[in-house]
Image: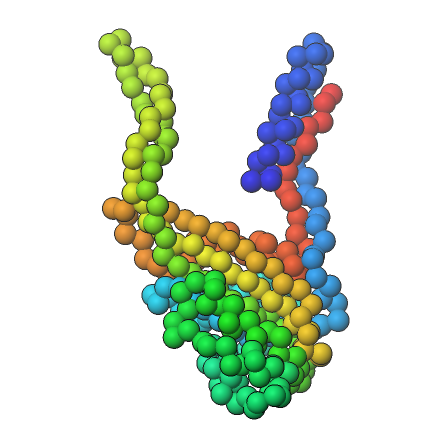
Length: 266
């Protein structure tokens, strides 16, 4: 999208130039890349552990397992960090277990007794349900211990909400029409449609495995809708939405570049 905008801007500038200068007849288009620095300094780390995620929403997709697999695959080719191959952590179950281990007036693994006593929903359906599980990300002792077990890597964790979504309303589209002489034209038309799809809301949390503390977090939100007649599998929708999220996620760990064009006049 950024590259397309840059190309359009350059094209408009060229038209204005050529309109003002009659001699502006020869030009050359070249490809350029603008580097963007990563949001997070990962130089202290040589290894990365994608530990696991607390997932919620649709039961048709195991968002914890699928997210870990996808991110590990991306990091193997898009990052200089060595990806640790380890079992995917069932974080929701770990939160429930830690809550049962609490003692009155104290802390367990850095989590206050009051936080542990917050009722856990039987099923995670919304962002509000996920908030109860956020206690584990403040559990410094837990993440520090996990980091020690894996040689103090950068730890990636967080939450993934993947929920069904429906919307209806008028949509504008273009329609081809032909007159009596067979001449073609396009006119805008508004049609009422019922559509269904999914909303994906991932929150990525980056933890320093040496100290167990958070160093960065970022939340994304993507949505996709299809005509009700279109039967799209939930897993396909999940990967379609994650494809949109991945560039932003990778931008936190490694340098990215924006591709565009420039025009040289002669």
